Image (cartoon, rainbow, N blue to C red; front, side):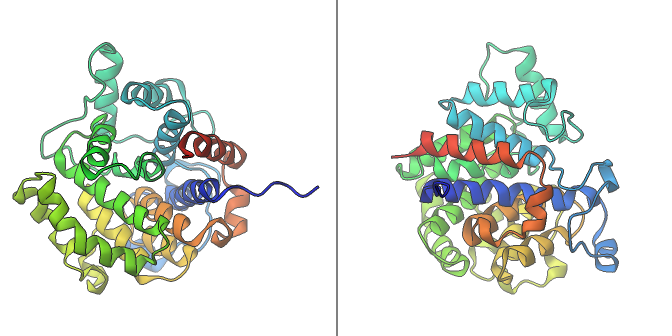
Length: 321
């Protein structure tokens, strides 16, 4: 008998999780290498070893913590459960590609330590100062695109804020995560990236006012929400660890390219924080283009692919209407 075909929801989750993990794995071997090096030696396929000396197809903390969120959703989501799973990853190698943590952001590490040493306190222990706006919550937020995504705006934003605040408690990180997930929501509804971006730019400014996001914070997202982001020259697109830069880079790559492979390779070849830019971009590209668009030779070497697919199945059951 033919194998059962995954539901539309399961297929979307699979494509998003696999797309994110592949983008992450493409970037791992060249993380921290600058753009000039990527221009001279662009990534065009899965590489082995490099920066972290890992085999080809190895994903990093970006995918690991994404999978921790997906696992928490599959298991009956609560902020505490997610914080526990994230600590299990860092301290006990849960959802690692090969049984070893080899990369973690400073802000994330500090937050997980705070929760680990005070587990009875709130799990929302992420830094709240302006300098705690790395991309460490944006990189793992994608599973929320499938969980309670049709609830009212305020409820959606509160959920996103809490998931971000487990490691990153500043409003700017939450807004970046929310905008990213709004793009994902529009893509899930059948819009093209250009259409989804146009909808985002048309709706988000008023929604940010409804959410009482301070104007000085909303102003940081003006370039994204101007409608002009795809026209920005690559020289003005940054690809370091700042959450706003990662969001801009991911949307810019998605809007300027026409296949999954082109999109994620463009992201990785921006240089610097290559694994996270690749992961954040790859999640949206996977969701939009679908699993069949991901080059099979990349999927064949992807670490724990069967486990990721099983996680997508279990998460789809938990997220089903």
